[in-house]
Length: 288
Ligand code: FAD
Image (tube, rainbow, N blue to C red):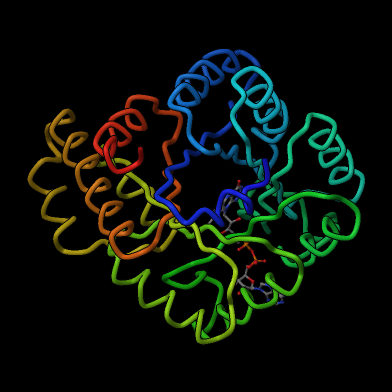
């Protein structure tokens, strides 16, 4: 099913993200975790793509396996970073043959292992979207940043990029994680004013351990609200308590989003079935 069809339903929905393994030996444990999440019967699951190499080999096969074996709609990520036209066409044709109908088209994270830019067919996500739209019949998603992409000079410029994605055939946008819903509401107001009308899926990251906090903030540039910092300070030294508090915080964020008309929420579940299961259980009467 195309995700654009799910999004017109305007009722609370919770989807989950998994990432592919770095090596063949980890494939079976990754697919097991992903399958456990699929058993929760989310409307869709996304599978990330390692722009620097590493996990990319397994991204398409994990998305295809999940869809075929578990019957869950998948959203396969693909990036400009490290992809020339032959890599892109190979991946896209493979995904199409596997029956996958949804692609998340991204520029990709640039790391020290990323191939040089002159080896990529496209520099920005919107160019990749235009290419996919011209040759394939996928529903196309893109990324957006309530707290601005770190490379953007101004929020106006950042929102202009979203307009460009929309004009290039993007069907929906998923947000970078955020921990203060007011930041999202403010962002939504601004993008709608600027003419970005496509559906937005809110990305929520349940923080379940203190190491994750540092990693998350340094990678995404996301602000942590005082309320969250206090929770982490107090419970951080007890792994079980921190896990429970992180899941409760994410659940509260999601309930507030639903209550404010943001119906589609994507959980960065990081291959943790237990986290996905507990959040979904907390919302069982809301999602039914
Ligand atoms: P772009 O849209 O190209 O934007 C990058 C910067 O360039 C921004 O500052 C933007 O304003 C500017 N810009 C955009 N278009 C133009 C243009 N035409 N001309 C000039 N400037 C422009 N990374 C991975 O490697 N693999 C993944 O699977 C993955 N999944 C993600 C999922 C989500 C929901 C999100 C939010 C991010 C994900 N990322 C992933 C990270 C993402 O690749 C990085 O944030 C990357 O730095 C930017 O990607 P983008 O698609 O937004 O790029």
